[in-house]
Amino acid sequence: MSIKYIFVTGGVVSSLGKGLTAASIGQLLEARGLKIAMLKLDPYLNVDPGTMNPFQHGEVYVTDDGAETDLDLGHYYRYTNSPLSRASNSTSGQIYESVIKKERKGEYLGKTVQVIPHVTDEIKSRILACGHQEEGIQVVLVEIGGTVGDIESLPFLEAIRQFRYERPKDCINIHLTYVPYLKAAGEVKTKPTQHSVQVLRGIGISPDLILCRCEEALSDELKAKISLFCNVPQDAVMDEKDVEHSVYEVPLDLHRQGLDETICKMLDLKSAKPDLTKWEKMLHSVLNPKGKVVVGIVGKYMDHQDAYKSIFEALHHAAVANGVALEIRKFESDRIVENGSVEALIGGCDGYLVPGGFGERGWEGKVLTAKYCRENKIPYFGICLGMQVLIVEFARHILGLENAHSTEVDRNTSYPVISMITEQKQIQNLGGTMRLGAYPCDLKKGTRAYEAYGKNLISERHRHRYEFNNEYKEAFEEKGMVFSGKLNKGQLCEISELKSHPWMVGVQFHPEFKSKPLAPHPLFLNFINALKILPKKQLEKVAPTSQGDK
Ligand code: GLN
Image 1 (cartoon, rainbow, N blue to C red):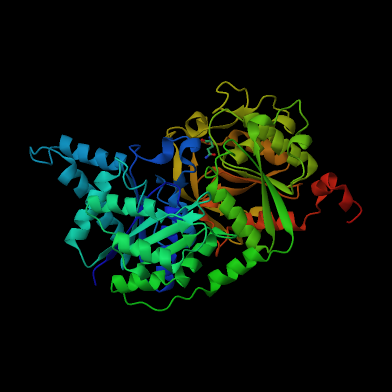
Image 2 (spheres, helix red, strand yellow):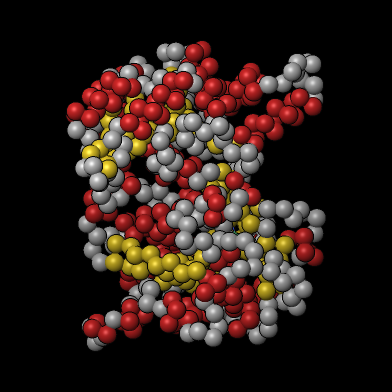
């Protein structure tokens, strides 16, 4: 049977949750026993989001094969088991880059190179490649970034129009729109949806299904109106209302309205009724926690809700699996300064997490956080830069290496405890570029890391240039630092933890990329579990009523 394609476009406004919707559809189809693949097409001209400021674009999600991709791939990972790789995300930048490369090589045989057909052909070939990255893929879900009507997304929509024209029986288009409630008028308005569907039809694409983002469920009357004006059967107009508690409610809401059933009918896909019991059980735990843990995150982009997306999600998964509610308190690291009391600035959380980051800004605030956690025996979880901070803090205050630093910040430090691999003399010529993607790591028995994972060999994804400098390894070990994870068949230190501390662990990789609600990440599980069971010392300090209530 031929592969089926579902295109998801967005109308009216951005930030409607297209990625989440596409991921939810993917999940429902998988639950029906179908094998799916997912593709995000991004209309921007950057070749990948790797160089974009997190304030602009949020998190960069890294795949096993080392692609720096859009954060929507994180949603795909959390909701589905679809293969995720370089073939799962294409940008206009990549598409133009390959068209221009071909042109330079003379592959267009003297023709004038144009958006149609050359750019659109390149887009179509990537859609096809996504469906052939593994054997047996039955459905490819293609999400088009941006909003219909944007100049930049036109080549993508044109490519989809052609793709559909060439395979009329194998494609459907799902259009996600916004149906606002106007408070002053006391009315729900369908006009923006009508307009965005008109724009889509002007490009030659008629939606088969319309999903309406709205605050409250839509009445049958409103659905009938949208159906009539937009030329879509009424049972193919569904609402996607704001969730009450958790984004993980979305697939269940869509399933209740028959979305997966309708898609399968439209595409003539034979499949079983979905079994969603595990997901429902997980959601039940989300809604019925016993107790709460408070995690302080000390980072640089705390105001941007997507900059640490996978970290927030991974913490939530671990909290749900531990049966507790999670409160995240956000702290901007450059506001944590020596002369203020760190306790007064950030105190009161059960534990702290310092996420990844680049550049100098905020470094010292993170070092103060690590010091505060080490001295007060408060759990500390350092991810990537967060591990480098843990190392630098330990070097300065326990090993007495004054001004020890990462060469990323201080190129001339006397004690480069974190440095680029090419700067580390004993292993020269290995290249000094970013270490990206999955690397195997050996764990040491009897350590916190081993306890968490429960096995010898793990694989985690990396995205960094700097590493622990092994010249200092013995000095660190003598003072109680344990290097519990080491690059398999290599010497690089991937995990460091403090022996005489309830939970102080730094990892050079990004475990957050591999956490799912139904399969929380072992390190996050272990961290949250520690917060749950350790005495709530710091909470007692800020809540006098609980004093004596040991
Ligand atoms: N800036 C650090 C490095 O390049 C850490 C990167 C990160 O946290 N992802 O090594």
